[in-house]
Amino acid sequence: MNKMAIRVPFVDLRLQHEPIQAQLQNAIQSVLDRGDFILGQALSDFEAAFAAVSGAKYGVGVASGTDAIALGLQACNIGVGDEVILPANTFVATLIGVLRTGAKPILVDCNRQALIDLKAAAKAITPHTKAIIPVHLYGQMVSPQNLFDFADTYKLLIFEDAAQAHLAQRDGYHAGSVGIAAAFSFYPSKNLGAFGDGGMLLTQNSDVAQKMARLRNYGASQKYFHTEPGTNSRLDTLQAAILHQKLPYLPQWNRDRLTIAEEYDRELAPLATFGIIPLENQSDTGHVYHLYVIRVDDSCPIERQQLQEELIVAGIQTGIHYPIPCHLQPAFTYLGYQPGDFPQAEKLSKQILSLPMYPGLSSSQIKEVVAAIANAVSKDSELDKSYSVNLSR
Image 1 (tube, rainbow, N blue to C red):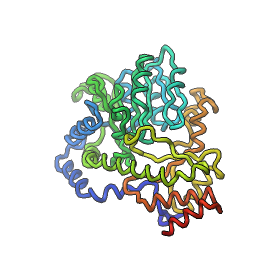
Image 2: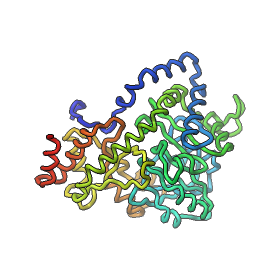
Image 3: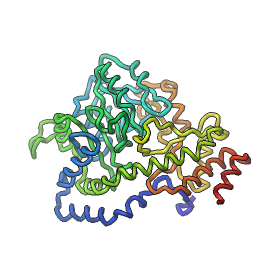
Image 4: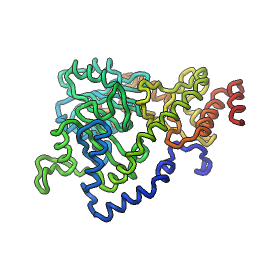
């Protein structure tokens, strides 16, 4: 299918950028005028601003979300001989970040909302376990209160993977304010996205922040004075300037996402009979819906792949986040995990489907997406006919 045939794209960043194009261009021009492209003023300003709105004291910008995890764990003194618990159903960057420290990743299963199963995590504790990484997946946080209880019981560090949870809230806490540190990604399609790769570590701990600042800059505490082996991983000043201009709009963009999700919930409700089940929002207005994810349950008349194909024919793009859990990825078979080790993560990986979700997605587009799903799963039924009638009005 050619690009012109797409009626509802999975993401449309133009809707976000066009209204503030002049501001973005001015921000870029300001950096060009100053010429401070590396560790410049716009980076310092954005680090402070993003930390403040996220309830953290310190922000350290890096080149990617993956580096925010890997270097952030190192800044928290995670390394060889340590074990780190993380969910099997996450993007591989979480796992790669642990591996880069030399620590041993310990994968565990998830619950039905795709968040880490803390009961499973408790069974994975050993004398070498030092930290747990709750992944705030799809824009919904793992419960901070449950994490506090868990970490206190087992004397563990909490290191948040908040790559999909910019300004998410739960139990009165923002993502990024719960653990000793938190990693964020500014990949372009994130709720707060750059014009390329970028990431940040947030922390309440000044020692962690200072070590992170050294690690991202060749391990240097000052120019040409290197106290530890670091790397080159700095958030570009240009990207920071762009992100800082977008930051004031993020709360409204997140509210728009919540409104869209609520409309999806209402429109999809009749399709529960056909095995189309949205993942549950357990965070009320604190869910920021980086992704809107449904399950194509075993009771559905068609399989997920067929549904996705029929939606493409209807001009609707979808995604799968993620189709293969970390423990079944070919690159990580050496870790020793087998199919069946994490049944909930494996089941979800075969059922989940991400629908179009972005600020500016219209009510008519939402109805078009849902009608296409209804048509695919309930052909020739009265429900499908009712959707067709409603759309024609």
